Structure formats: C-alpha cells, structure tokens
Image 1 (cartoon, rainbow, N blue to C red):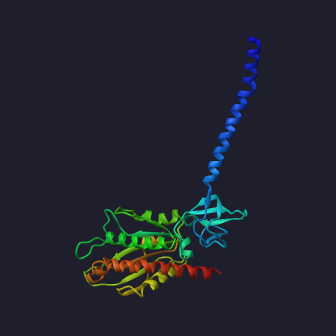
Image 2 (tube, rainbow, N blue to C red; image 1 turned 90 degrees about the vertical axis):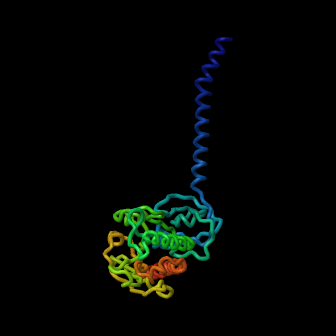
Image 3 (cartoon, rainbow, N blue to C red; image 1 turned 60 degrees about the horizontal axis):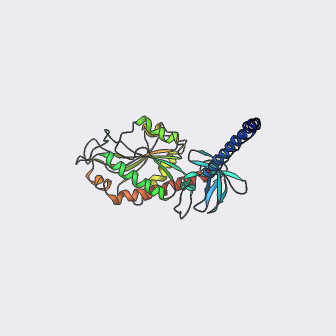
Length: 296
C-alpha cells in the first residue's frame, strides 16, 4: 500500500500539479487579456463624429460615427484615437469627442481642434498696471477662462498655459503648443502706454506670415470688430517671443489699454469679456474653414 501511495504521489507531482499550474496560469492570462480588451473598447456617445484617414483635423474625412457604435481603440496619440469599427475598417478620431457625453448641436473642424490659450503674465509677473493699481495678470486669466469655456462648449480641446495665478516663464509658453501638437495658439494681453490715458484700442498681432498666423490674426480681428466697444487698431506684426518661437499658427491679442480709464472700464467688464469669448470661436471657425478651402 505504501508503495502504491508513493507511486500515486509521484504521478500527481509529475502530471497533475504541473497541469493545474498551467491551467491556472492560462486562466489568469485569459482574465487579464479580457480586462485589457475591455479597457480598449469604447462606445460612441454622441453622433456625427468624423473619422479621418490620419490623425488631426486636416486628415482626410472617411466617414462619420453613429451614436452607440462600439469601437476598439488601437492607439492614442496627441489626443487622437486610432480605432477599429465593427466592419473592421480603421481610422482616427478626436479622442476628446469620443469621451464626451454631452451632445453637440454641430460638430465642426473647431470641435476637432486643439487650442492653447495663454493668459499673459501671472504670479510674480503682474504685467501692466491700471491707473487704480489693478494687475494685467488678473484680467488675462479671467478672459482666457471665459474663452476656454465657450470653446469647450463647441467641443474643442482647450489647453491653458496657466489656470491659476502662477508664473509661466516665457520660454516655456510656446513649448506647451509644441508639446501638445496644438492646431492654434492665442495669447491674451492688455496694452499699456507710456502716459496714462494717451492710447486706446485693441490689436491682433502675428509674427509668422507663412504658417497661417497672419490669416488667424485677421480672422480673429474681423470676428471681434462688430461687437467690441473699443477702437479697432487692426492687425499688425509683433515680435513677441510667445508667437515668434511658435511653429503653430499663433497670435497675441492686446485687448485694450489697461492704463486708459475708458479701456479699463471695458477690460474689467464681464459683458465685454463675454463678447470676446463669443467672437473668438467665430474667428477660429472662419479661419479653419478658409484653411480647408485653401487645402482643396
């Protein structure tokens, strides 16, 4: 009996225990694979999202996704997802739209764009000062936040160089746009004249002429003009680091003179900030539409 017991134990050790271990490991592998595959699945929550041949708003449109479609995520890059549809076709989609639950009235090229907003100055860098001792950095942040809210309502992916009262060094600001492969960059500022109350108005500045920056400045200035309660000083060349060292279409807007009592009344006005926040998306839409036409 003892000999039989030893033989049985030897047989179990040689065959069943390795088999049990192998089965257990396979079970774990299957479970992990199932979880990973599930994590790479996503259901389209809003209709009419454009699927493109390549990542980016300039990619050739292939089709549009239907609400409720199940997709497999193959890759993620710069906010864009490469996906496989149920018919096995593949393409690229703006990931932030796939993750969005709130419906959009209309999905436009702006909805598929990554936009960097730069509220000028911040932290120990107060910027220009009003005649009543108020800092430029306060109002650039207020304005940029309002613009960001409006753009996000349009579906756009918005990245702020700062969202609090902190300093962001000038050399780092263009890198935010570069790192995130942004489609557009806007820096918000308020001008100041050597003497109080000697200047007034707003200006859109560009540096590069060949990458779309001048056209972007023109489109934004034109969109702001009908409702702005300040003098339109037009579009001009500006040698500012944040737009000079930027390879994406980039503009800097001086939204009035902070040391002008007349302008400062509008600068701190919620109503005027809202007007700018509504005009900026219109200008961006017009710019993107024109760029698409030019590409054709």
